[in-house]
Amino acid sequence: MGGGSERVGGSEGTGAPEGDVYDWFRRGVQLLDQRHPAAAVQLLARAAEAEPDSRSIREALARAQFDTGSYAAALESFRAVALADPSDDYAQFGWGVAAARLGDFESSAEHLALAVAMRPENAHYRAALRQTRATLAARAGAFGPLLPGAPGRLAPPEEPDGAE
Image 1 (cartoon, helix red, strand yellow):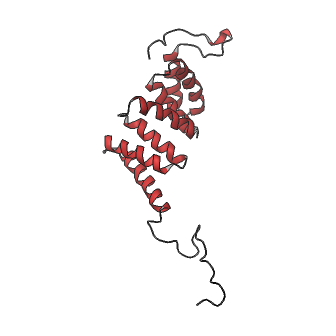
Image 2: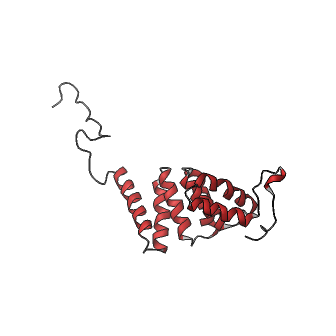
Image 3: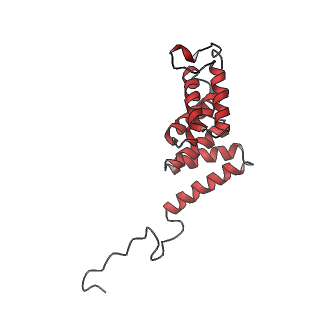
């Protein structure tokens, strides 16, 4: 995270938090670990503005955004990390899970499959991919027609009068 060693005072009217970019990153990750993702987003977004090429800051920001339910923002942050380093399995996983939360199961399956290919031993990656693929299969009707009375089942069309 080069270039982030400049000290910034928060009490000088700039609105910036105290410390340098690395301090913001460390405090943001600590807040995220303590289950305060909204507060973490504030610090990590500031750090990402100061160090836009830092994948570690961007990944922590993506996690915080995801945990606050900001799935579109999380997807973009995970995407930025994955595009900077396509072999980053966690960024691919995050991209896939965020895409699923946004209802884009095709994209989700693609990125989760990449994560699983890179780390096949990771049970979380495999479970997320199975769930996404099951959703895609269900939407494609792979499990057969819905039974009468099932939610989402449409009634068969009525026959015109005189038809047998």
